[in-house]
Length: 341
Ligand SMILES: C=C1C[C@]23C[C@@]1(O)CC[C@H]2[C@@]12CC[C@H](O)[C@@](C)(C(=O)O1)[C@H]2[C@@H]3C(=O)O
Ligand SMILES: O=C(O)CCC(=O)C(=O)O
Ligand SMILES: [Fe+2]
Image (cartoon, rainbow, N blue to C red):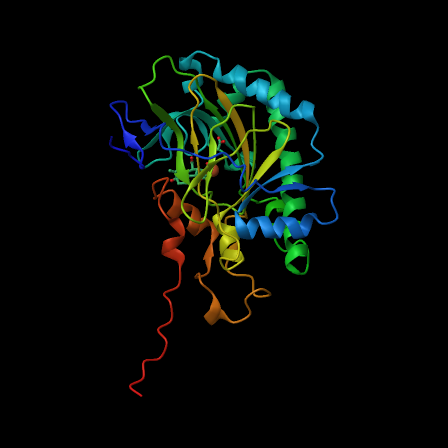
């Protein structure tokens, strides 16, 4: 028997993975769960960001009815006829997309809506998402983004407190800034009639999120997996009432690699549809991203060159999903002086 460990592309270009590649569920090494009301939360968050770049939060303070309201609106949108949904696309990068992810040939068993948190930065077709649907969708999106910005900032303030960084809004002020380049993604991984035997469709291929922080919420359909430090994949049990936090590339840089932006992917369960909504907390386009000087005072110790978020974003949009995007921004290791002693 040939055991494939890498995804392979089928005729329809959606990669598939053999189901007999065992993917353990997070049990032996449970996913860190942080109660945001726990006085120890900041210490637990720092530990989870160092060990996994990923954790689950409970007691986050966002009302359950807002989560269900947005999920229902997303389901209603994705149930529209294809021709109507297409009017809200193609994503450039904002708007409705189906199967194609990003501009460089990535595909997945997915359809989605990508919206910038700042409506002025969204492309015109984005308004079609709401144009054909009731006001209730826009209200749910706006309210959700507002609440998720708060959750992101609360977590980032716990990060700075846990790391002993002052002031405590050092990170959160970038996401709170009115020019913050944050976005919201609504993903739908549909069911499928046919399924190649012993194969599972890749919904969203492996990647890291480029921003500072991502806050993910899904319905109770499984599919999300994260990559451990040893390269193995672990399935994350879904939990519709909690949020899952990812460290993004920009936070990896600002902590000089102390926190790792977590590689993750979604394998679609084609018998049950999955709906996820992710808030990506990003800095303003002009923000300079570099290791924080309070963490790494000597520039010689910086692992990354300074760049603006705008530079990183345009570089990300030239890359494929699975590329290691930070590679271009790593400093060459200093050659220790060569002596002939
Ligand atoms: C293939 C791509 C899609 C993406 C832009 C990119 O060129 C590389 C990064 C991808 C990603 C992953 C996290 C988020 O879902 C996303 C919105 C982002 O900021 O970076 C997507 C981009 C996208 O789908 O537009
Ligand atoms: O849909 C999911 O659960 C995760 C999707 C994801 O990683 C993304 O949109 O960046
Ligand atoms: Fe992601």
